[in-house]
Image (cartoon, rainbow, N blue to C red; front, side, top):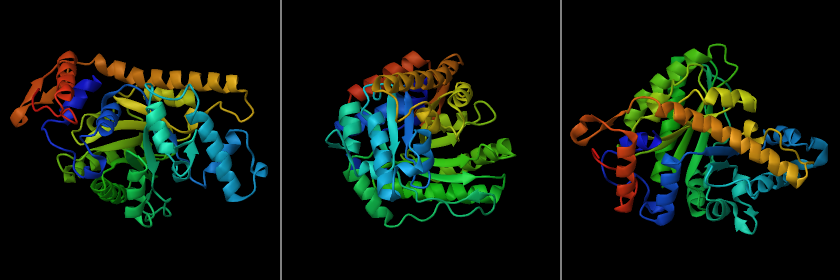
Length: 370
């Protein structure tokens, strides 16, 4: 089913806009794009900001009294992340991508820069959190603060081997004007990221505790579908979204030609809760933070740590695969053929066509009507 959706996203051949810096004909770019777009697996968010790091460390068994000041705190956080990223349990093919905090990218793991280590050693596609926090709530939403020297941040990320960026904003009430302003800010920044040769991950989070969460999610979907029309035909974005109250609400985004992938955030819910919800949403992959770290502890023996991480990867992959399995049970989708004519394609046909395109040197598997 994922292959069927992938083909519908790339109906005309041509390069991805703004990807000169990524060298779309390079082997690395081709492999990362293919992995993010179509492979079955999970994504992981290890991008907690300085403000969120004390709570993350506390859940990991490191209290505020165990370090002094921000530098020591960041050192402890990097040690925790390095333990996870260097674990034999962590990596491809089941872990497809990881969102990193800027401090992690500036460090090395096992003697290699973090982004290079993830791809060259683990075959995990690296993403970077670039937002700098949120303004106070206004109009039912919290918009992103400006990113100082954004061009320099993006250029440094590309030079470090980062594939894409992540930006988060927050929705707290169903105010259509506020949601529209939030989405427009996300899309404006996405166009900037695309122009620097990176793939944007847009995270317009709906607060899990929002009293009118379902209404917020429907408004968000409507505004996203409307705003995606402003992107160019070759622009591709990823959405990281709160798991919706209504199952399959975001399926129109999963199948949208400008959307590379839709992944889910957990909103601080337990691993069992988010997995049960995720499995009911077709085509959406896990991209959790707290739920991924659940059960890991600084005081664990390495054997216990690996066992916990193994169990977590399995249950998250099962939930993500469950959503894909549910999708596979549905009738074949209509793929858009040449001239915009819809034609029904089965998954085996489209999978074969996609792999033929890749073998023929088509960098993103763009097959008009194949």
